[in-house]
Image (cartoon, rainbow, N blue to C red):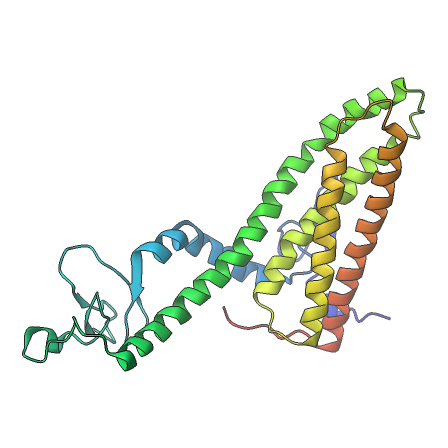
Length: 275
């Protein structure tokens, strides 16, 4: 039997219009991410998303403290604005600025040790940014797809009416609405799995989680493709069978993924990292 304590952050509430939200934080229902991590993620997105691509292309990091530095003039003499650092360095080579105005000037000469240290610091910062962008882009992509697929309900209504013209009863065509319901649930779950994965430290269980995530994502895309096809008299039976098979599989994989994550909360498998 599942522990109630482990699910303190998972309290779905259905309002009168059918919308599901989290009772604990008031956000949209965000299983498998706990409220505390979702709050951190939303703040990070608000702080970073608009500038992250520009930062990646137009800035460097202070070789001493790692603070992000923008070059706003032609001079290559940089002074870190971090009050606890204020390092003087060269924008070009990221080395100390002191030798650049003396006979010890060597910015034109490649120093393997200094260059490696500078590259390592730069790469760590860039890697952190690239990692964030990887998860953020996928999170946003599923969010955008979810918005589009909510619009499927209107097109599905037309398809259901068309199918009834092909001698199918009202009950027989309800599989299409069921398919869109499950598709939207899968998109929402996948969206929040990328938040969960961003803060997750790697271990054996995280590999299983990523495999479940990959399988759900693959089948969700196939279901989405089926639902966007034109339905004709000739492909009616084939499309119905494929859609039914796929949405049942998608629903099963979504539940398997969430069950695994919930079990991990109970068993303390998941270790979150600061990011």
